[in-house]
Amino acid sequence: MTKSFYPPIRTLMGPGPSDVSPRVLAAMGRPTIGHLDPLFVELMDEIKQLLQYALKTKNELTLPISAPGSAGMEAAFANLVSPGDTVIVCQNGVFGGRMKENVERCGANPVMIQDSWGKPVDPEKVSEAFDSHPEASVLAFVHSETSTGARSDAKTLCQIAFEHGAFSIVDAVTTLGGIELDTDNWKADVVYSGSQKCLSCVPGLSPITFSKRAAERINNRTSKSHSWFLDMQLIMSYWGEGKKRAYHHTAPVNALYGLHESLLILKEEGLETSFSRHRTNHEALVAGLEAMGLEMAVDQDFRLPQLNSVYIPNGIDDGKTRNELLNDFNLEIGAGLGELAGKTWRIGLMGHSSTRRNVITCLASLEAVMAKQGYDLVPGAAIDAAKSVLDA
Ligand SMILES: *Cc1c(COP(=O)(O)O)cnc(C)c1O
Image 1 (cartoon, rainbow, N blue to C red):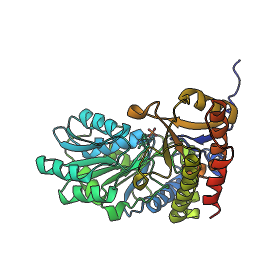
Image 2 (image 1 turned 90 degrees about the horizontal axis):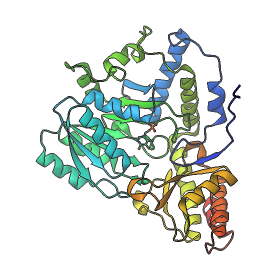
Image 3 (image 1 turned 90 degrees about the vertical axis):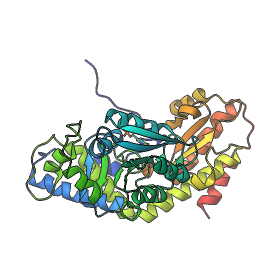
């Protein structure tokens, strides 16, 4: 007989999942009720309101997709893009490439805008792409590129799309709860996120919101979306207004208890307080890493506080370091991806993981592991540097 699975208690400081709050885990252990139970329908309404708060939107069409962030991405494209459409896609990391895949699989034509990995999307190039492709109906970009740690100017990019009469699709998977996200003021048309990054819920859910304009487009759509599961016309029969809800799929009831709790935690803390906590812990981590002689991979102006890309110094073994952190310190940090594979580490300070304790734990562990590999450092200097930020 195989045994029950008891995972170790890790400290999750990678690109997600982040440490899940015990409050969220406790909520998920409560009794399962039916997905059409009137009490569950009330909870759905509350989740919608909490999402509207977190996403800063009054959009009616706001809900969690019953699948991870990638499904939120797919839902955005499957509902707003039809065969033959032209879609401007910005790529400055891994996730823009996945957007291109989505456009192609919708039978539409992607116009790619490439920027260097680690740099933000260049709004000039986006304007030029609209000039040469006036037929473009959608602009898609990643606000927080988790693969590199760079933040793009979502407000400006959404504005460009709006001025060209196009819809904007914003990947805010790593944004939500960590840094400013202003759906309505940005005039963003579709914003999707994930549960396991700065919300610190379990993986597997994708909050999404559609502007009034986008919702009208979906309602007026004459050709069916190629995706049955992600077709918002159908999903609205379950997540829509009023007490009458029709079965579309069985909602992940307990996971939604968890999402509700994580959104409640965010609301209790307040968005602005959460953002400033993320910022302070990020500044402390950077001060510590720099005191160790490490160099950040993203310019200060575009750095994501929740995802810190740092160059691996010469003479330090990437895999060996991450393995030792995991095995000896129960600490997970992320590897570089794509162009940055083997060159950077990605240290997450997302949601419940963004704490003073984790900043210090990470610096102390990294110091110990790197010193063993002969890296020249002053023991304790990183922690002192971090503390001087944390205690300021
Ligand atoms: C994590 C992530 C995704 C995908 O989310 P999953 O939950 O892994 O499917 C998409 N976009 C960005 C920017 C992400 O960081």
